[in-house]
Length: 372
Image 1: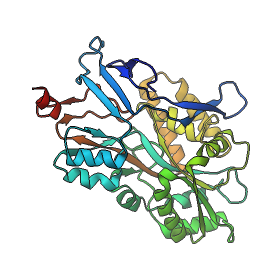
Image 2 (image 1 turned 45 degrees about the horizontal axis):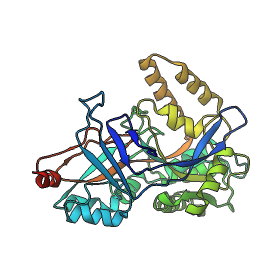
Image 3 (image 1 turned 135 degrees about the horizontal axis):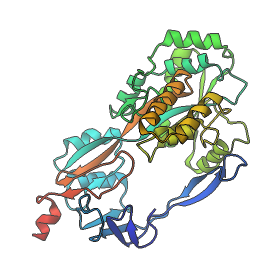
């Protein structure tokens, strides 16, 4: 959020023009003090936002290496990609490149594709509140995981720019590295779901937001083909998203799904359980869709009070292993963050946030040529 002139981020830049803000409202998880979460309702921003180098920044080794940064919020994604791939001088970086555009960037004379292993996941939130279907039975949850063809999801859904998950932690972030992702085993998936007792006349209710609708469509095919049951997909319109978020966070009404396809970006790469696992499964987790789990709470409590880094890492692995063994989510993928960058920009990306402190340009960059 940059809504007034002054230092930006950790201070390598100073805002001199424009703003990019967030408007939020609170959703309460339960009636305990501070048991709430901010929901993003709007993102007002100016067409241009200009940063200039803070020459007094304390960490000169880190940067800044750029004199001036201009964010162009008035240029649609498609046009920005055209300007970057086909010309020079208008756009130097396009963030959040769609995997379907990756080949075009790679083939461009002017641009390079940067694919970063980021702290972001797409998972299936399992509704353990419902009594209509046996999702409190670990066999049913395992069946859902065995039904998913993750290799196809990575290949076709993300153009190869994703990693299959074997838990809630991305594999490069210290997760349960000893486990392979659940295999795609249609026969075992159908057997386990049958043992769990899924009602013959009850469809699986799948829900998704518009940003992960393509993933949800692939899951519909996987669940139908592997489990032998009907699947109903509900895509939540953007205009209804805030209401749906309140329903998920506040948990005062029955949730209208069995599995919710959900994307999440973590801002902490050091201790995934503190954010990822806590958000999805802890008693005070905004995305928890089931009763609190005693053994999980004990592990999280030990993790939260541990001050030894080595032991904390061990507990993080135990938490991920427990979540994996109990199949407490439909583990899908960890997408990479894709950036299209001018070939003369020395881009330094991060797993969590978009920062430009260490990014610079070469002598062949258009701004240097013009300036010279």
